[in-house]
Length: 211
Image (tube, rainbow, N blue to C red):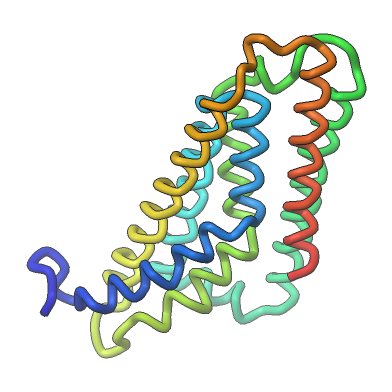
């Protein structure tokens, strides 16, 4: 039985896809650790901005899949490795910024970071995340019926994946934000928080490097 608005996709297929990718989304990786680092240092609002950026990044993946352009990258080990190591370098750069800020006395850098900056960081974290790339190019095609419209099916499955990412990371941001009191941070605690957030990003870079 198919949903009336989704004639090409069976309900069972959509549920099975959601059940397959949800545990992967909930597994700590670059995206989750980036959202956590932002929520720890900048509160729930920073985590939500990071979440929005990550979702935008995956929308780019969705468009590429629908157009078939990204299949070329997936088929080329050299391009995929270049993407992976560029993502590692990007997270290491962000971590170094946090660690440097933690080593200095004064006001926290991320507390005053422009909204657009956090959004952009989240965007590039998702775009450069090989885990997300593999979900789109290795798992998502397994749930498609190749006798039907591939682009429409890719768009539907991608929408489910992005929606689940948003749900998980919004909840994570709110939980972390509710447990933090960034307005009461003294300089010592601020430096500890930024140092911890930087360590999370280093761990995220490690996840990328070891895949």
